[in-house]
Length: 393
Image (cartoon, rainbow, N blue to C red; front, side, top):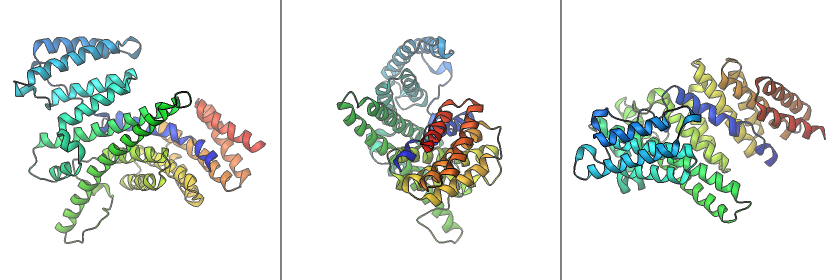
């Protein structure tokens, strides 16, 4: 099965498309949009800080080819240092205020864009400590109790949601740094240990996020069950209408998706598969006919097809591939559905090849190669062509 696992188009392409949809809609908590990336009115900042932010913006808020990221980072860090110094005596600029934590998040973002993952991890850890304190970082259940408190101040609730977004970004960044170290391990033996350590930290923070969301959801769901004179349960329904109002569907499905792709990438299929299925349930399997939900559901199904192949459950892999293709066909002009269609067509070929139905596999690989070539997806076309060559031997 290892050959099929390594040749899945979905592993690299689909993650980008599903997150791009969320970010484009302005709903992605895990991009920190609308939460951590908050800059207050200019009058909120002392003049020297405003000047630094203006200088940073001139270097950063430009087309990529004209950006000066080192200059932007220098100015943002200087502005943050000045605010932190003021915050020791002026509570208006305390280190956990939104306009201050938003600046920390901007530092993390710039570091990431520069490829400085060490700096990004340091900034995200700093941001979490400002928002939660050391004890809150260790135990997600303390935040669950706060979220479930109906009297919780709106700003405090938003602070927890900022922390959730930051924790997810921290997990993603540890994951990215671990993958980079893994690639270097062939020539740098010590990089393998660094990769393992970063994977452990990514798992820790994905787990923290999942614990916060799932325990909050379960308690909220059971509270509603009791109010309706219904029995409580260990597993909520994963009907989107039953989520707490402060957990939009996009947020929960994105978190589950991110964690699932991490787990499947580390061969932890038993952890990945339930998360993908629950995310799909929250999206009602695209049954509402909404174009975005249909195409994102097809993407989730392609990952479920992959987990079926990786676990040796070929009937499940075939079922998810066929169901996903049926959804992807509904919106052929949607870029996400198109990418999903190519991946699922290829994945169905993997299923047939693994089952020994080589002629059926050739048909799927040929179709995937043709569509990928016509749409300019060179990487997908190459994988499909390599699969056909392999079968021709």
